[in-house]
Amino acid sequence: MVTDLGATELRTNILETAKRIVVKIGSSLLVQSDGSPNSRWLLTLADDIAKLRAQGSDVIIISSGAVALGTKKLDLDSRESLTASQACAAVGQINLARLWTDMLQTKELIAAQILLTLDDLEDRRRYLNISSTLEKLIQTDAIPIINENDSVATEEIRYGDNDRLAARVAQACNADCIILLSDIDGLYDRSPNDNDAKIISDIYKIDHTILDVAQGATSDVGTGGMVSKVEAAQTAMSSGIDMIIASGKKEHPLSAIQKGEAHSLFHKQENIAEKGQKKWLNGRLHAQGMLYIDEGAVQALSHGASLLAVGVKGYDREFVRGDVVEIIGPNDRLVARGLSEYDAHEIALIMGKGKEEIAQILSYTPRGALVHRNHMVML
Image (cartoon, rainbow, N blue to C red; front, side, top):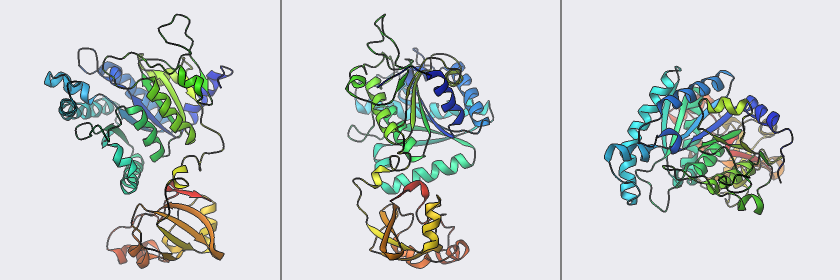
């Protein structure tokens, strides 16, 4: 289901209104054919990021390039084996972090590095840690720079490309929009090498037609093709997140998108902003425990608040931080489901207490909520 009607206006409005944007940069943009960093282009991207920040948008970067940079330093073919790729990543990651630090410093922005594997976002405790770390970095005006931890990832747990990683991170940080910058400017209705190929400007549903034309773009140093981008779009759209595929081969690539230059926009599915974004809480995960809350807490949750200890009257079963808990209101009414920020034995000590009391009881600065709104779905 595609249409070009009103495409430019729709795309411009998305970047002007998105409060949190995940931007993925492919290796072929960040690293030149001779293995050296594309510093001039990165300076223009840093300028775009600064402008987005000035308009009030949070920006999270998913950056490829570690393996490609390390390949140049070690004079080693990273395609030789997984071990060779890991060795190149170990060397390249240092250079990648330095590169981003230098580029963002030109705009007085702070870079923060996070390395992830698939397991980090599948394990619920680590998922909570990642989400909390991202939120704190954003609050302190740092720019998270995220990459797959290629130096330790194995074939079984590695993403293999950063397109799908971008979609999973966007879920974890409750992003409004994902931008995949690549060496191709969007999804075409046939092979982009065909002279008659036309870009598909707007995609509202990923069906067999879209999957059939996801041929991918040629890239000398990247690992992700169009198939992985469409798979990322499926995750994004079903999670209430818009996703854009655009060319990064021009300077100021984000500004170019805002000006309406050609790209493909995968529109988020409507009316699923909360349940779609957190559908995994309703799906394969089963509740390990229960929290019983008072009517005041029920009303607070219904207005978008997180669950605080003061509103909790009791709990059931033994569970640990990161486990799924059902939140039960008066008359045993199931109100919500979410991920607990505390172990059950800690909740036994702090339920019904205020923040200052909790700090004294636990002897450390407590987390803000028992179940954070970002990790909760109302039922």
